[in-house]
Image 1 (cartoon, rainbow over the protein chains, first blue to last red):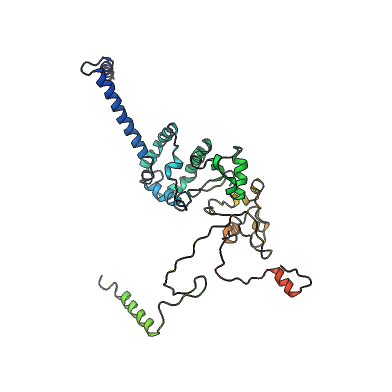
Image 2: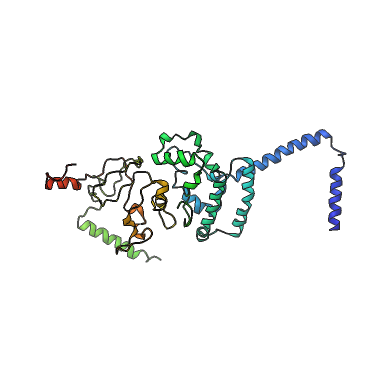
Length: 198
Length: 162
């Protein structure tokens, strides 16, 4: 402990002492360039984890949830616009994204210890996992839905009467948010016993 | 190893011999129904898919007991052990909130006529009886006459013509 303190003290001394060998220009410019490289590298790595290919590189995702989305309108449709995993499951804003990524460290833990590494374990946990996502989308007013489905640009005349009825009332007043009604649109549902509205 | 396929190949040879013997065409003409013309192994270009009608307008029933057809799209609706998307609007509890027609009283009883408090398991799978409709020409001609037509034919004085 004592030696560790001594070592830390020595390094602190090095950091505090003005540079002898390098000019201020080298230090500032070098620091600037190194900063760009590190920051760019960090963001590139972050973006690499924000791709569908990364998500389904784990069999837990590939053989459960990814198979399920393939039937749905968010995977295949007439115009070919599609949502990938991070479009709905990772916030697009930087701070929220970092917060979500920090939360995802729990998922790394789960991967290492095989929390859902069989179909049975996954089904067992599905309700809990789904509830996390419902709670997240409820809390942020279905932000990830609204990244594409912007309420301000919804044309009720192009919606079916019952869709227009609910969107122009409950959704417009803010009483309900997308996820309140649109659960299970991209993946199969868990046992919905006791879920409000089901 | 060498003899494993012997019975199989013998059977195949025998089968071919029999088929050739009775002069039965292996590629029989398909029955003219939903897929007129051609033989069984011929592949046709399927007719284009149609959208489900989504007008939310209730359709007339051809007879009183007919399960009403679904007047809206139901793509991706979950109806399984875990969840029933139809009932999330049409159930007794939800119908006031959603203003969707409540499932009829016939759904609350078992086959012995015993009244149940909740949807009977035999009535749980909605699409067994209720189906959406497509805006497409019927594949086969339908000569169904509804009850009003029949009553009119029996006795034009009392029955009304449809």
